[in-house]
Length: 78
Image (cartoon, rainbow, N blue to C red; front, side, top):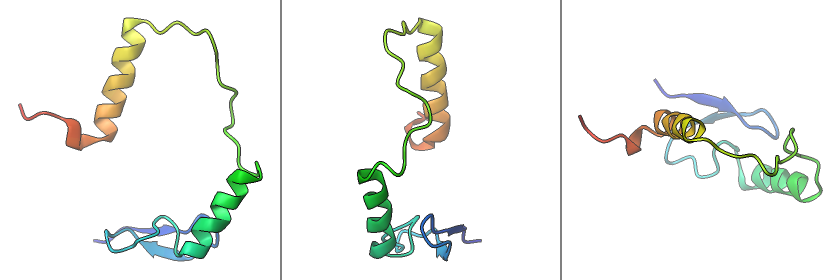
């Protein structure tokens, strides 16, 4: 089954395939509109960047585990 996603700009359905060059956008136009929104600061990261936060070994391990789970291609065979 092929995954379909909505274009973030115009909500057209986009097939999630390697051939879908602009995914998750439906076209270069929608991709550039989104880029323009970021450039004009229309899109922002919702939380301010936290400075001076000490990362413990446990926090780093949890982040690494989360990254590996989301990116299965990095998992070494057992």
